[in-house]
Length: 179
Ligand SMILES: [Zn+2]
Image (cartoon, rainbow, N blue to C red):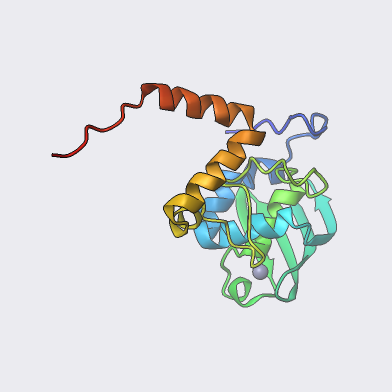
């Protein structure tokens, strides 16, 4: 399967190299596992990948995370490989740095894009530790009145949300009083 990388951000003229064909997002997620993949996406979005060198069947770069790593990707006979100077890479695991390098090298993530274009991820935002923000955890931490204030405030500046809420309210029936 070859994924067409063309999109609204000017990658239309990139040829599909072995690197592109092998290191797509699905394959990176499969190789790395969810935890490393998520960290890698965050590193890529934060622009931590530097010194990028891309060839048709390999790529190398540095990733400036907890430590500066030197990371390489290769495709040999269609098989993905990676090396990295971090502890995870040392045991030949596909680490977060390899994920970050792959996503930037193939153009899946362009860290120079506006930071509001985060549609590669489920929730799209990360806290200061690079962890995905758990919207449900946040909302459940609010008590009822604070939650109502938040939603009403958001509806005041978001017409789509306000319309959806009015629709939901129109279907709502005040519960019968008990007793
Ligand atoms: Zn690594």
